Length: 116
Image (cartoon, rainbow, N blue to C red; front, side, top):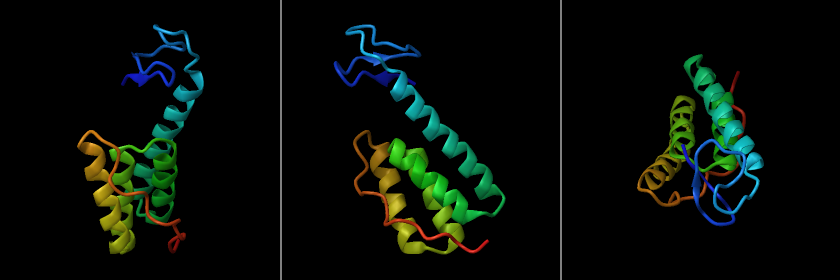
């Protein structure tokens, strides 16, 4: 997946520096990798029935990179926890991200850990 340079907006594939302007992209790559790691962890936790922890991972991933994948994971975790109002907001955020723009809604209010 291409990473857009924050200085000149040029898409860059797997490069530490922007091919156009030379900006350092390593910090952005680390943020993107951390968001992906939280998604992977959250998916595993959701499969284990640990919705509260999965929701925490999804929320952290969302804060790092507002991706439809993070919103979808948060939606599923919210459903697993029976938090339907929160699930509805995450569903709307996921749908907004898939339409190519910024997600329509901000993430739901900070989460409360679910039962173990």
